[in-house]
Length: 168
Image 1: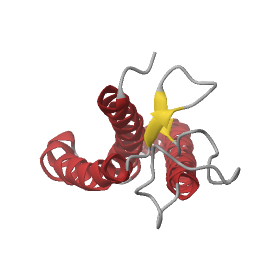
Image 2: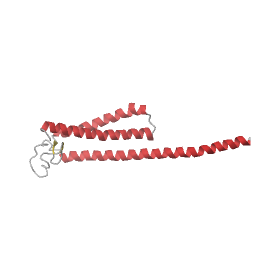
Image 3: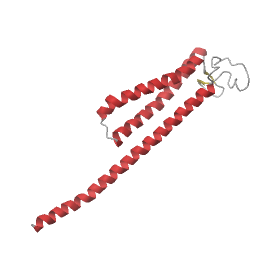
Image 4: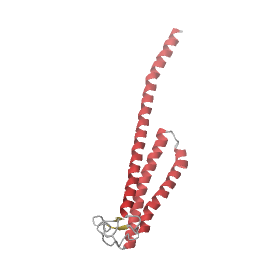
């Protein structure tokens, strides 16, 4: 399953990088929808200005998030997973007061702190997605209400114009 230390580290790095990029791309897409639907940004402006900035910010946030555990040797196999993740090796060696073989360089930053950081970033992303969703839905309902009001007023204006034309 895991191969050697190098393949395990490479596998864990790619998995964390892909997961983080998926979350960042989803957040970027939701921000794109908010800007275009709620604030009326054109696709051209969004593609030329917004998306490059979001991709740069994502890359600057993601690469260290996946790179620090690689540097600290925290990508190790877990007993109950089929792939390598951010954890000490053997699993829970810090809590069981065993000598940690994998992640021994992580004396200042523990695997649990790295996992907590990733979990908090995912929580922030979830909050961002919920807020974006609410803003887009509210905008759509407001637009529908405005169009409905405009359609209801339209026939009244035509009727008033006909009455004025007939009166003259």
